[in-house]
Amino acid sequence: MRIALINENSQASKNGLVFSVLENVAKRYGHSVVNYGMYGEDDTHSLTYVKAGLLSAILLNSKAVDFVVTGCGTGEGAMLALNAFPGVLCGHIVDSTDAYMFRQINNGNAISLPLAKGFGWGSELALEQIFNELLKCDGGGGYPESRAVPERQNKEILDNVKKITHQSIYYILENIDREFLKDTINYDFFKKDFFENSKDQKINEILNSVLN
Image 1 (tube, rainbow, N blue to C red):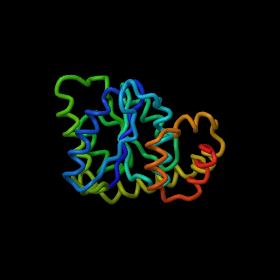
Image 2 (tube, rainbow, N blue to C red):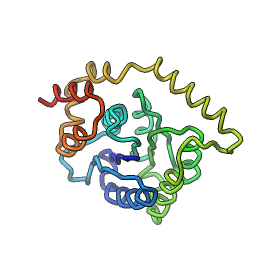
Image 3 (spheres, rainbow, N blue to C red):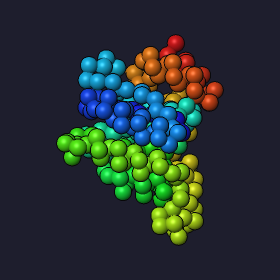
Image 4 (tube, rainbow, N blue to C red):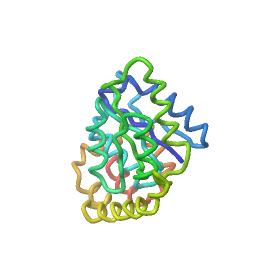
């Protein structure tokens, strides 16, 4: 998997720590990590948790990445923002049990972490445990395994419901406030990494029209 890390502004100072732990665990299982910022409190390109939701949706729907790790102070706001968009299924992950069960039962493509609430001494160890349980095996295996078939069926039903209850990503990108969209994507790393890895030409064309 290609995993994107996105930190919003209130927790930008945690970016280096989260990236280091995530990358170490991801390499263990043959995955790669790309850091979409914010890179620190002095980063001039600011991302709110709502922008993190929009950015995650762009990355996932274009297949520029396969999975997103994000968060905010409590993890709740970022989770809500990501789930507001089509093609994104984000879990609120507090501990390693959450991570394993979300991956095996819900098989989503994003997680949101609480990066202030309860984040103190030993948090790098907790992050390592979360990422290990998240990435150590493929998603959708079921928990317990005897429930795997109905859990996969429910996931498919949920994905189909979201297709009806959400506008398409193309509609969203064409109708969302243009300055908000531009503010979200107008920074060097996005423009380099995204356009090299996006597999959706229509999304590329919309975003190019916004940036140029």
